[in-house]
Image 1 (cartoon, rainbow, N blue to C red):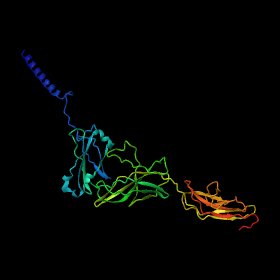
Image 2: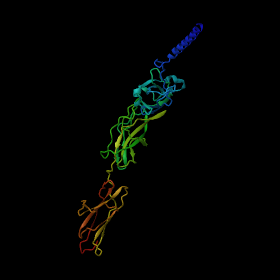
Image 3: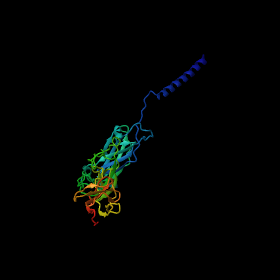
Image 4: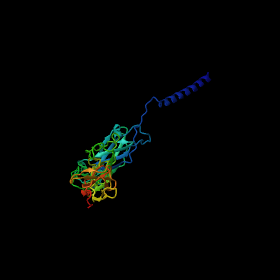
Length: 401
């Protein structure tokens, strides 16, 4: 019996140990909740900023990982911070004065309006109050992101930029088609959003080539609404790229490289000059024009009419010649004949004359004729009549003059 009792005690101790082990293991059972720390996005490190007109443009890439290396399961929200101070006060000793304050919060569900492929573009429209009485200010921007409340990322890299009030955008740009090209005209701006006096010039001219307009020969489009701050281009039709084609110190500006039949969109931006820098304005209203060649060439010069008398079986006739037109788009010439001075008469050629010469075999003895010629360009525009030259055919039996 003693042996059995001792054996029972050993088994009991083993059972107790196994129960303890089961209790300890049970603490990590799958059904029991465990506390999980919120993800903190990695800090943005590529924030950059530039001024365009009276707007600053911030760009950066959204983080896609947390500080612990885990991938973010959702798009983080964004907070933008900005600090302003007069540019003259900026410096290492005044860093506290530029401490940014919260400027804008973009909820996670709206971030896609400001981003494409993770690349974020946010605009900050400057106000007159941002400048006060200062001709320029220094702005300091930072951004933070987060996917959970009270789990903001660290501050991004801080970027600073000296800002100046840009001149008010030009709002009366007009385009006129002339024989030598498209002439742009506008009224110079007189002020900025801050009302500060400034010197304006030069003006930068931008042009984009578009699909041909379906309507009139030449038209200028109405003012276009600029892209809303922060709005992406994904939802709207892509606009043609404006490319700088020249500068001028004052209006007007002639675009002599414009081609008839093409459709162009023009914008003019003015440069506001300050003692410590200058800034380009926003785009003017966009002038759209499709130049059409409606301009006739100049009348031919040097018309000469020579009577060729009867030679054997060849009747008397006139040989006409004139100077070659110096214009480069001449398609040919027309000859007109009348028997009455001051009357254009009828066209003698059935097709355009390529060379500046014509032989009139259809004349009658004893009559006088009045000749003139015109030039026709490749667009079908016909010039005014040349100077009229007259000559007569002697009556039969009369000598040739």
